[in-house]
Each structure stands twice: as C-alpha cells, then as structure tokens.
Image 1 (cartoon, rainbow, N blue to C red):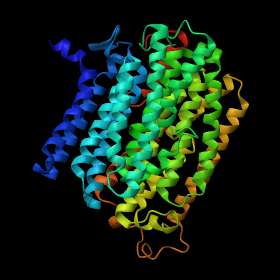
Image 2 (image 1 turned 90 degrees about the horizontal axis):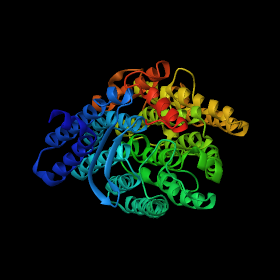
Image 3 (image 1 turned 60 degrees about the horizontal axis):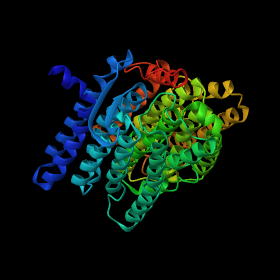
Length: 505
C-alpha cells in the first residue's frame, strides 16, 4: 500500500495545489486572509516536498509511471517522471514557495482587492505547470497546457479595469488560437503514428519530410507563442498590467517556461533530432529565435518603465532556450534545459525587485529611480546581481547555461549564432546596468531618496525582501556550484544524453 502511494507522487504533486485552489475559491470571503494565506503556504510546501522527494530515484534513472484512465484508444491520462520534467518541476514547485511569501507581502502592502481569485488562480497555475512537467504523452500535455492558459487569465485581468480586460483578451486570443493549432498537430501525429507517448529521441515515424514539417509547424506554434518568440510575442508585454507577483509567475515560474518546455518536448521527445534536421524545421525556428534575442534586447533599451524593460528581456532570454534546442547538439540542448533554471532564478529576482520598489516608493519608471539605492540598498544589490547573471557574467548561473549553448553552437559550426549570443550579452548589460547605475548614482538624486544614507528602514517588508534576497543568492550559488541542491545540471545533462543516445531519461 505504501509503495503504491509513493508511486502516485506525480499525481499528488498536481492535485495538492488544485485542491488548495478549490478550497480557497469555495470558501471565498468566509475565511480570513490569514487562513487563505495559510492554505497557500501549506500547499506550496507540500507540493515542493512531494516533487523533491522524487529527486533521488530520478537521479539514478528510475521513473514513475502512472496512468489514471484511457482517453482514446491506446492513449491515457498518463504521467511519467523523467530528468527533463524534474528540472522544470523542481524549479516551479521550489519557487512557488517564495513567490507565495512574496505575494502575501505584496498583496498586503499594496492593499490589493480580489485576493480570493488571485490566490485560487495562482494555485491552479502551478497545478497546470506540474501537470505539464510530468505529462507522459502529447494529449495529457495539451490538457494541462490549456489548464495553465485558462488559469492565468484571471491573474492577467486581476484589476478588472478596461486595460486589464483588453490585455486579457489579447492573451487568450494568442494562446488559445495557437493551442488549437497545437491540438490539430497532435491529432495529425496520432493518425500518422498511432501513438502520442513521449520518447527521448522522438517517436514520430512513417512521415515524409514535408509531412513532418507540416506537423511540426502546427505543434510548435503552441510553444512559440507562450515562449514569446517574435512575431508571436506581443501578448507578453501587455500582460504586464497584472500585479508584479503575476509578472514573476508569467516570466519565471510557469507560463513562458511552459512554452519553452513545450518546444523541448516537441523537438527532442516527439520528432527527435534526426527528423528535425531532415525536414529543416528547427533551422527556421533557430533563426526566428536568434532574431528575437537581438530585436527584443534593442526594444528593451528604449523602455523607461521597469516592468516593460524586464518583459522584453524575457522575450529575448526565453529564445535562448528555443535556440539551444534548435541547434541540436548535446551541449546546446543541456544548456537550453539548464537555462530554465538559470532564467527562473534571475528573472524572478528582477521582477520581485521591481514589485518591492513599486510597493515601497510607488515608482515604476526607471528615470524616477535615481538614487533609490540609498533607500533600498539590499533590493538594488539583488537587482544588480541578477542583472549581471542575465548578461551571462562568470560566477552567475546564467554563465553556466549560456556557455553550454555557445559550446553547442561551436560544435554545430554556427559562428553567426555564437555572434548573436555574444551580442545579446552585451545588449543585456546595456539595458540592465544603467538601472543599477541610476539607482546608486550620487548625481541628481530624486528628492524622495535624498534623505537616505543606506538605512534599511527604506526597504520593502520582510515577506517581500527575504524572497528576492534568497533567489538572488541562489543565482550566485548556482553560478559557483551549478549542481548544488537538487542536481538540476545533472538532470539536464542526462536528459540531453538520452535524447541523442536513445536513453530512457
């Protein structure tokens, strides 16, 4: 009995936050804010414990396979824990704890309304994300992919104003429309291949190159939209009307990461490297990703609003994952997978800092933040550390993932892609370091910050400050010891090896 329950941990990891979401929504205003927050935190901790308890077994190659019921002939609602899924699941479940703590501080500090819907939808998003991580086949993946889409909508329109509603409609138009094309591609693959089960190295056989390219095009749109690949990215910047914790969720924990994860599953576990090379589909996607990296960086430089600048940074940084996968070498794929980890910790730090600044000082424009480092030295130190990581400087986690992608590009003989990645690092310094310079500048200090001399009394509340300091610290620690903790670098390397060697991870 105990062994059977242990084998169901992938399902429990999904259900924990789903149940919490339902309890929060049903009880609504009948419970206190403290009780609602206690439910959120309890679910976050239990989900992380459930996910991380599977790490030792997954590291040695053991898998957890669970099929709840059959949906269509030969295809069930099935879950499977593999190395790739563990990378995303560990990041999402671990960061949910700190995002929840931060959310509590933000919601209280900003006096936000609609908190019942907020915390309920937030929990459901994490159920969708973990379901995506552990989906064993395309149909299960699609179900949770759409759950994540629908659950995110109330968060985007949280303020219920016209701007939020307009942004929400655009978000749904992009994600649901691409989702239907994704589903059409899934059906096409099933009809041609008779299976939907993910396999390291791909399972699609019996297709001509033209048929494979057509199916790939239909399916990849589902991932490219959520990953913000240009020109399918415009929903992402407008979604920044949502509260800052939602922006952190969108950019670091769940939605855009789910899009990048979808690209990995399609390229490496559905079509496979050989078929992708033969039909040329990944070559086209690689150049779209490279263009996205450069163009989004150039746009970010021009944005004065801090969240808008960070949003376009995300558009470019997520395309690192897409590009790494499409280069189709072991080093580039392992780097792309590990960039899920690197980008998550760095970008969530940046957005948490932006939220802390807004709640504490009501400043949202970079030009208004001259001298803010005097009032919020710890917050801006964390922002600076994460900015250096985004640029890929040594001893930061971003350096580890980006170096691996560059090594993969060198293996593939792609000097133009290497030049793109190097140029992107320089551009990242161009649009992020000026924020740090302005913050710590001693010239033309904003009058609101002139009276501060480094005292911590100007920092955000502890529920907001502690999470951002933690994630900034992890960004540094993983840059020095990339395999620290849950051995996510090992998982990334194992998953990449399995894809190119036909393994089981």
